[in-house]
Image 1: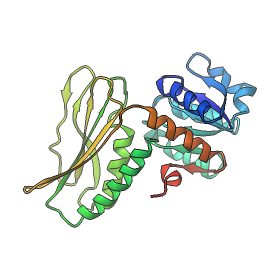
Image 2 (image 1 turned 30 degrees about the vertical axis):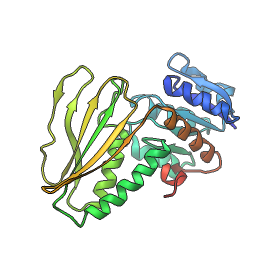
Image 3 (image 1 turned 60 degrees about the vertical axis):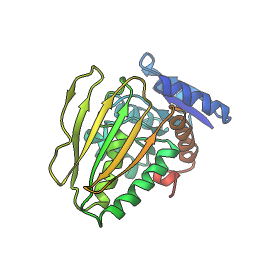
Image 4 (image 1 turned 120 degrees about the vertical axis):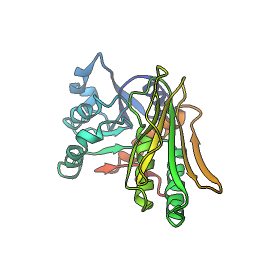
Length: 251
């Protein structure tokens, strides 16, 4: 199929390589220096655009793509707080298509299913308190990560004793530290660590006086994310509306 790329950083380059290897054609590449190419015939010819940019640019990129009725697959995080309702309206009422996920990795999809199942089990054992930690490279702008927020919301949906997630201990890219995991009983703290070039580590721990249970997903590289994004584009070509990994990976 014909794919447009929005954002041409490390992820964009890796997605390009995988998409070409899978037989797809890259018809347009848009980055910060050629935003006007959204209005080009090449971009409008795309079956799907794959978007990996940043929290401040993502929403406007969706609207630019939708203006040409181009479907979008996006892994950008940090935009939902301000724009979730409008994106839902565009997809559910105006016929646009967005496949959004905080993480496209197949391994993270499996980890997410395990996370939901474990939370259901632990709902019966209140002696275990739950915490989460995410570790990412120093270039990541948002904290907690979108993946951590998704995992935390899954826990809250299945664990009656937690009502909301909050920022816990924070270790910033410049080495400064702030925050604490000592929070109210109904809050789930997410610790965020920015270190080196770590692709992404997410750990969830249930701790009691007797023992501790921890599950972890540790990404070796961005390749799993890029492959998942291309698989999502292949799925999106023949599906419509507001889509996510639970549609693509039905565990």
